[in-house]
Amino acid sequence: MATEPPTQGLRLLGRIDIPGGGQVVVEDGYAYVGHMAPPRGTSILDVREPRSPRLVATLGMPQGMHSHKVRVHGDLMLVNHEHLGPGRQGDGGLKVFDISTRHAPRELAFWRCAGKGVHRFDFDGRYAYLSPEVDGYVGNIVMILDLAEPTRPREVGRWWLPGQWTAGREEPTWQGRAHRTHHPLRHGDRLYVSYWHGGFVILDIGDLSRPKLLAHLDWSPPYPSPTHTVLRIPWPLHGGDWLFVADEEVISERLHDRTPAFVWMVDATEETRPVPVSTYLLPRPADLPPHVTFGAHQPQERLYDNRVAVTWFAGGLRVLDFGNPYRLAEIARHLPQPAPGHAYPQSNDVYVTPDGRLYLLDRLGGLEILEYV
Image 1 (tube, rainbow, N blue to C red):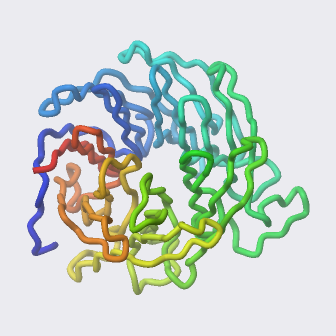
Image 2 (cartoon, rainbow, N blue to C red):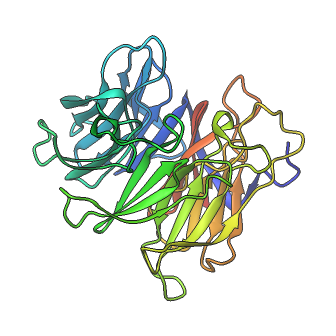
């Protein structure tokens, strides 16, 4: 495919061939992987020796559903349950597990919801910030659950884009589920929420029971790809506040084929009026077959310096320097080994630990562990 070096600025430490995954998080020497397809739901791996990661526990999933997202805080693990399409079996929602014994997760609760279930979510150890489908609304909305008592998750707040509450006689101005909550991320008393083809919103959650809209920015259209993740930079740059925003390459939902999905820097110093000021785009290789997904997807969600690692599907892993937010620069890359039986990688998620280890998860199969050189 590409003529550029497959790896630059990174070193591969280890790999394990596991079924394709949607998210990986790492805590205290263990990696937690949410898988894309049944029968595998969630895997727990011991990665304390990165050159020889090993599987220690798995959770199953019925046909027609997946559990491709996972969060961990201490001895609690949360996983989503979401319907994949026709032939649905089981309930959608969010499951809570006690993982004090890593090789034997113990279910504590199952919070159920309507429709497809829960897609992505964030978790701060007390509150979960979800994107569930709920009766009476079109598409996923924002919901906040209190897990002070993990066996009894309790809704404490919700927010939706005006037009979603059809039971309240609101009428959407978009087609179908094009505008819906995709990925809420908390930073302080703000919730940064990607809204798919509805762009993104910034919510004030100082009062969790009454989230308040501060800003809404939507660039799709004219840009073709839905908004996937809105990441708040946790320190000032050039004297201001900034967001790193990733659109997602979804071939079936693109508005046009002229530009693959890319990433943005947004000046949010005046948070009620966020302003996009720069982008980073990788051209799609001319020799890549049209059915292969290439563009941007997901950045690391915990930042330690002015580097951010971003998965780029068939483009692998890209590390960008955002120290000058007006001019993003690629400083490292890694094109991983494709999953067995596939010609191209589909890098889906990356988690970076404070010691500089990068855990790169492929959508079709395989987890690689890397470090900076």
